Length: 420
Ligand code: EPZ
Image (cartoon, rainbow, N blue to C red):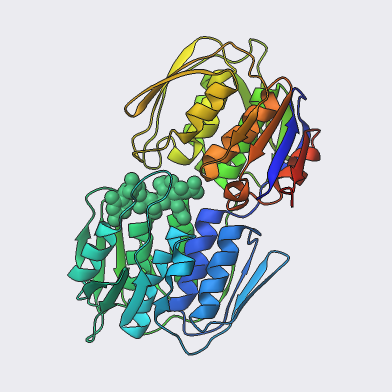
C-alpha cells in the first residue's frame, strides 16, 4: 500500500485546475445503464472509484472505456448482477439498482457493507422502489429486486435528504410509468448535474436542486455527450491547503456557486477568497486564521465531505472552534491521527472541540477513509517536519494526481511505494 511522504512548512503558490467531480461522475456514468444507446462523457476524473464504476458497467455488459478524461459506454445486452467483490470496494455501486430495475425489471446487487464512516444502510432506497412496485428479497448477502410489471410512478417522501437515495430513485423514475414526485429530495449540485444529464438523454425532470423533484416517465433514453461538473470538494480541499500553508492558490474550473457554505466559513475564519477572470484566488488574510464553529448539513449547508479538511484549518487557527458532524455517525477517524501530530481536539459524541494556535508536527499517520486521508495530507503540508500518510489508496478514490498537483505549487510531497 502506497504512502505520501511530506515535508511541511512550504507556503503553496501557483494555480491548480480542479478536476471533474467524483460524486457527479459516479451516478452520471452509472446512469448509462438506463440509456438504451451509446453515451460519452468528458471531464471524467481518473480516480479509483471511477475505475470501479467502469468495471461494474463492463460486468453488466456495457463495454466502457476511459481515456484522458473521456469515457464511452457502448450499448449492449444488460446483465442484472453487481457482484460482492466489486460492491464491497465501493458502496456507491448500489446506484445501479434503480437503472437496472427500470431497464431489466430485476437486479441482484450485493448489499453494500458499511465503511469506516458509518453503517450507511440503503433502507430509504429500497422503500422508495417498493412504493414504485418493486419487491426485494435478501439472500446470501445480496438484494434481489424485481418488478415484473415494470416500475410505476409514485409519490416518494424521504425521511431525510439522502443523496444516493435521491439519485437512485431519480434514475429509475425516468423510465417508470407515469409521474414520480420525490419529496424531501437531496439538493446537492451533483444531483442537479445528474438530472441535467438525464434530461440531455430525453428524460423529463423538473425541480432538481430543490426539495421537490418531479419526473414524468418516458419510454426510453437516448445517448448524448455530457461534460461532468467540477469537483467542489476537491476545490474546497485546495482552498484549505492555501490557508493552512499561508500561501496563495489560484483555482481554475472552481465551482464557486456550489461552494457558498464552505467559502463563507473560510472567509469568517480569516481567509481571502475572491473570484478573478483567471479563477478563484485564495490566501490568508493579514490577521491570520481564527477558529469558528461549523455544523455539517445537507446541501446547501456545510458539506460533511469538507469536515475533516476544515478541522485541520481550525488546528492552525487562533482560538477554539466546535465541529458538529450531523450526517455520519463515525466521521471523526482523522481526530486521533491529528492528535498524534500535536493537535488539541476533544470529541464528545458527534461534537469535536478544537483548540488551535499550535504548530502541528510531522508524524507517521494512517488514512482511514477518503476525506480523513485528505485532511492528513493538509496537516502534513502545514506541519513542521516530515509526515508519512499511509494507506493513501483511500485518497486515490477521490483525488486525481494529488501529489502532482500539490508539487506543482511548491509542496514537498511524493508517493512512496510500500516496501516490497
Ligand atoms: C453521498 O453518500 C456521497 N457519496 C458522500 O461522499 C457524502 O458524504 C454523502 O452523500 C452526504 O453528502 C457519493 O456521492 C458517491 P446519503 P451517500 O445517502 O449517498 C444515511 C465522499 O467523501 N442513510 O446522503 O451514501 C447514511 O448512513 C463520500 O465523497 C440511511 O440511513 O449519502 C448516512 O448516515 C463519503 N439510509 C446519511 O444517511 C439510506 O437509505 C447520509 O447518506 C441512505 C442513507
